[in-house]
Length: 239
Image 1 (tube, rainbow, N blue to C red):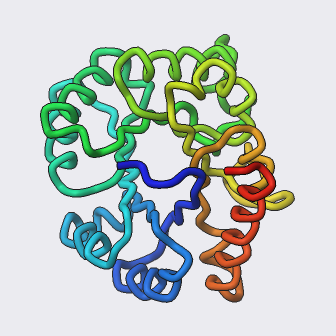
Image 2: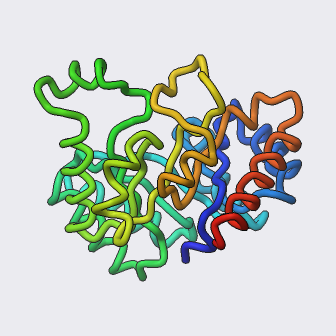
Image 3: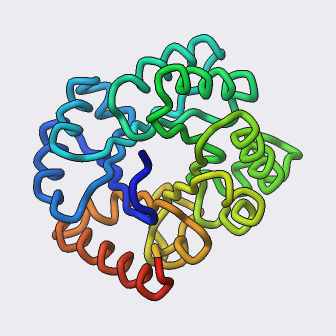
């Protein structure tokens, strides 16, 4: 179900489904996992998702479902039967919602990996206080990860800077999927970032990379470089 770890997931955050298909075709030699977010899903729906799957990719559908338990359960039941590899729900939805998602996935066969989003990588500690005043980010991360584990969620999505907080208590039970992969200062809306090597050293199972590949002069070369760095890290760490 989950494939070989660690691995790279490409965030295919592009303007259109046709552009996404063209880019994926160009990158398929070094790519297995593809993240589809709200824009492409709104544009192409399940027809687009199935087209990507038919081309041999494992699809990570990143919709961050966050609603009442019955609504989320119905959505998870549908997606779990649709052949996708992984789906995000938001851990802020609470225990009842997460349990409903987990039960729906199990009833549908449990082949899809459910991932709980902890805190968006675009939030730094200052902005976090405007969302949850008086709550330490570290406490929220640990609480949400614990909820995911207790409610039967398979893994979590967190920033690389959150891994030292979460790996000691949760790595054994939860798959760690980590966006915010950047070399140096990104100059974009990702605020809690790290290089691919730093994320892997801290305990990432999968790293999610989008703009560093998609906006590179040569996306193919950029992805090959990341794949080489991943393989070099695996060899050095006997993975």
